[in-house]
Every structure is written in C-alpha cells, then in structure tokens.
Length: 88
Image 1 (cartoon, rainbow, N blue to C red):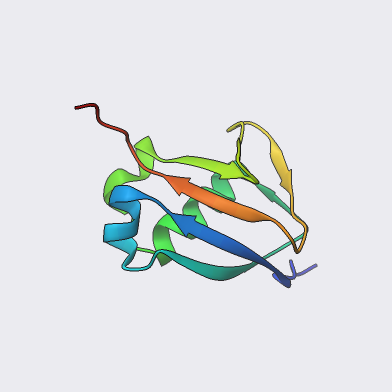
Image 2 (cartoon, rainbow, N blue to C red):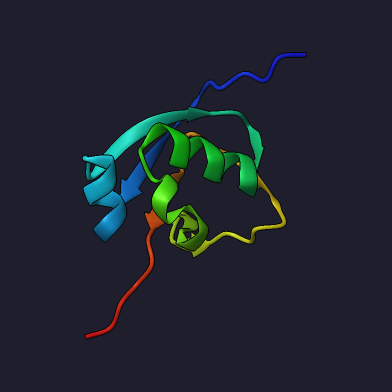
C-alpha cells in the first residue's frame, strides 16, 4: 500500500535553517500520519539541512513535537523548523 502525500502544510524555517534552505516558508505535501523521524528526514533531505539535522526541533502549530510519536497531519497545519539556538 502506497502512502499518499496529499495534505499540504506550511513549512516555516527559522534562523540557520532559513539560511540553509534558502526560503522563509514553503508548502510541503504530507500523508495523514507520519513519524517524527520520517518528517525530519523528509525536511532535512529536501531542504539542505543535513548539517544541522541532529539539532533541529520541529513544532506543529507552535507546539514542539515529541520525537517518539506519530504526527497527525491536517491541511491547516504549519510545521516550524527550529535550528539550534545560540545566546548572546
């Protein structure tokens, strides 16, 4: 059974992830259910974020996602890609 990537969600990139991806935001089609690791892999591979992959946090609708959970996706969702933060 093939997974259908048919739900458009907004991806929003912050700080270093924005610089590496080359965009502030974009739309990505996702399946109705996806694991955190699958989502992280999809985003890092498609948006040139491999170098910061181990430090990225993902948030759905402003809520940080747990790495060990499956994520339910709806059309109105937005996914934030939050890179390592530095103080100053």
